[in-house]
Image 1 (spheres, rainbow, N blue to C red):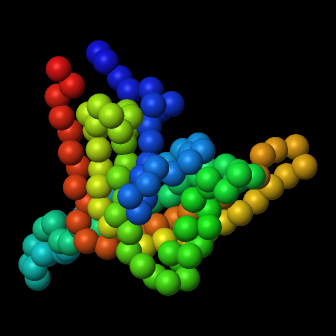
Image 2 (cartoon, rainbow, N blue to C red):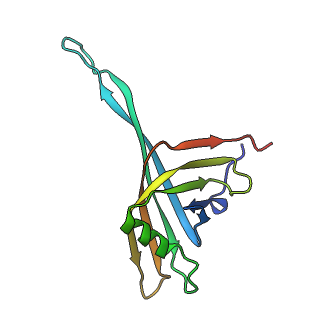
Length: 136
């Protein structure tokens, strides 16, 4: 069974690759709407609206190639940006998730014995497209 190694993953937000990404995650949700009626003996549900949200963590770099400043600007303006998440790498694009996101938080931190990092959280606006392609 072939599997993907996490080190080959990548992330693009606003049309450019996010530099120095350490990890990312996306959660794709479907609302469950209750359809139980009086007299039923068990609860029943139907699928409602879909949504997605997620996060990523990256390193803050000295040379300014970090997307850190762009994410803070997007947070302030509330501008939706296109995002693409690649499980492998963006050239093969065997597994790709795409959608528009709003940056909902940017957290920055450092420690005396570690590299300065930032993390962002985002909320999807509109649908998430999950695209899987046969690599052969």
